[in-house]
Length: 402
Image 1 (tube, rainbow, N blue to C red):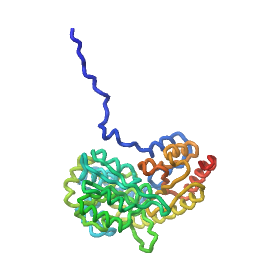
Image 2 (cartoon, rainbow, N blue to C red):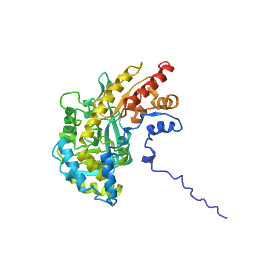
Image 3 (cartoon, rainbow, N blue to C red):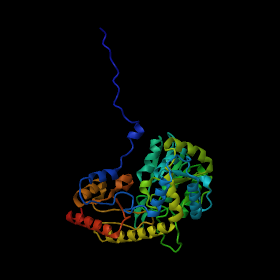
Image 4 (cartoon, one colour):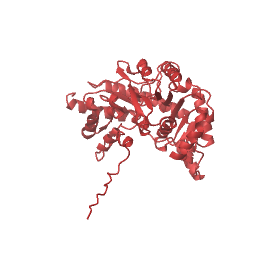
């Protein structure tokens, strides 16, 4: 009797590009804190304050009015119009036909990448960087090269010539985040002008993550309401896609609402991608967004003032600890600083959770360029910051500064 050799299928795995994605080390540190009482968590990028009441009231009213149905793929007209007015006030004329509403800023980043990047394309990203921007193109089969910021006496800075040299004619897309998570670095107007001109010459797309643009601490007398933006320089119909979110400037992290400003020629195709991703952002959440834009300017300005004060407070407190090297960044809501033990930042942060009840994000979570540093989100009251600093001081003292 002939023996049959049956093919044995391999184990069911995701495709290689997905399996190769790096997991969140921030989540890994947070998971290490489960079951430990009284941990002070500064690892995630959100405030400890709830969304303002007027925004929550707008969502409640919309729900009570039955705003539970599908909307236009690109967002309800009142929100697109409100966003167009908001962006126009900050960055110059922006018609609503250039604005699309998305289900969170991270969804906007994925949609932007899906619009212009395919398998085999070359993408450049400025790092250290929130990992989503580096990993999203890889999901699509693209190759990502990185250009690292430098750290020195002036904090985090960009070597512009090194970035321009990396933007070769075979580059499809530059991914850039300014103000930057995790470093707080802000790209200057002059740097943006140089990069935009270079990308124009070579036909390179720019996807600018400007989620932290309102969290900007200008040290001059300009009174700038937002960080420098590519929208200040680019026409609305060139290869620039700007991504933003309601999460930071209006404390709406859990609402998952964002937007894109892009060339009008992309909007029909963007609508298709939204349809195949989420169909649309929830109607009642969009109504909350209308309230945030229409009524939230005073709130946002006060939030920025509070964050500026918290930044300065935490810089002073950390600077008093031996071995800590910290500089005040120009934007965002993080300090990305070095301290003893941070050359293995993931292990250090796990130890801080276990032994000191202090939750920080490891620098390695933001790429190999971030190793040697940790990230501290200072979007909370100063008493909480002081408690965290004291725990760090005790931990380092007990280990002799090692």
